[in-house]
Image 1 (cartoon, helix red, strand yellow):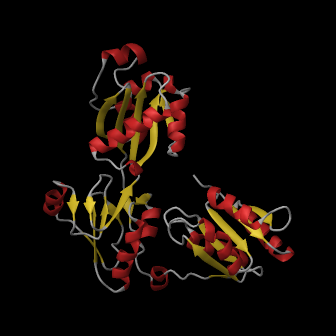
Image 2 (cartoon, rainbow, N blue to C red):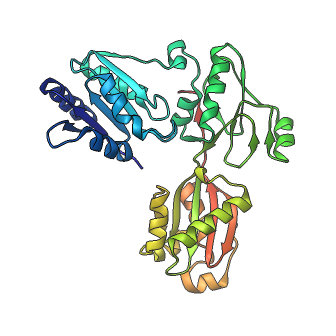
Image 3 (cartoon, rainbow, N blue to C red):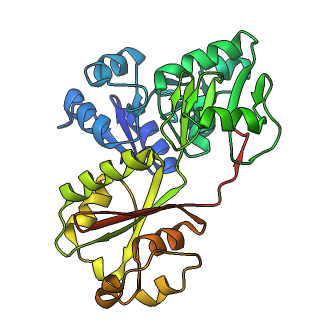
Length: 343
């Protein structure tokens, strides 16, 4: 997971401004030409940092990042700031990468202007990708963002389906579907062709844009010495069988007996999931109905690990009961989610 902001300057004046901005944002600075190669710096920062800020000409920034561009859903934020601080210009990943928001933050430090060119921002129109980011949802088909935005910019109504509560005032030209009969009819075969935006953590045949809320917590049980590859294979089978999108998982949990399992720890790190370990006594206190195993009780001191751990981690309810394969068990619990309309 990318973290931090990297600033690159080219002149003495630019370096002074970069240091001021880095101090304000907790970033780090470098000076091109002083044992710092522009291309090498860009390649490393593009891979590791959430934002790259070039204190210098826009053209330098554009040429530097061009070889490393992949996809709007993957690229970090890229900005250019002139060395006087008058203009802060987001160049890449304005919404999903947070470049527009960072531009406003940096402009507040320099006393300059954030030069925002994103159409939805300019016209004050609901930005579905920015909304998804703020609500901790993953955009499943980023290429469809422009279709939704184009309809809104043209003054057309978009239809959004979300079964969770959304607080606040519904944005202009956004119609939230409330007809449960429509939802039940469509969910029977998971085909949604009547909507523009679907919020769901299950895999659906959807011609619109699907947003995946990251509200699921994965409970894990495994034999001693289980490797990362076995866990990856098990998760793939589990999600496919239960029709779950793995992007919806935000954390993991298990029993404290697994605290030193390297395969499990690497598996969670690979997915950027923080993992929490519970004692057998804590797991026994989990509320709900769980599938029990006397064998598990004899080994772990509690009749079920994965379901109980998932519920404790989520603070909510069990969504998917125990799945077992090759000595690995998984379960999913859903946190109590409440979204709002701010973006």
